[in-house]
Image (cartoon, rainbow, N blue to C red):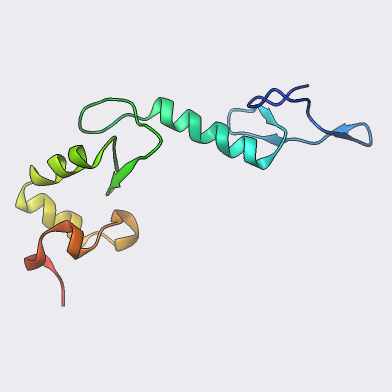
Length: 111
């Protein structure tokens, strides 16, 4: 049996194959191969929420959205309505990944 990512033979110890199983059920020779395969699969299936293009090695995130470059993320943020900005601002910080400084709406900052 071979690793689904690097194609090396899976390690065998005491007549048992030692492997990591991915979400798709495929087997990997190491945790590193598993992580690399899942990251590659994410990049090929997820698309930029602004232009629809594929994501590269660097992914820009804003709230729960993904962008292929900072320019597309900035363009999306500029076209948000004031009401939508207020809703995003009220969500818990762990969900949005932004701060008042990079959000650009200092008047919405809570005290």
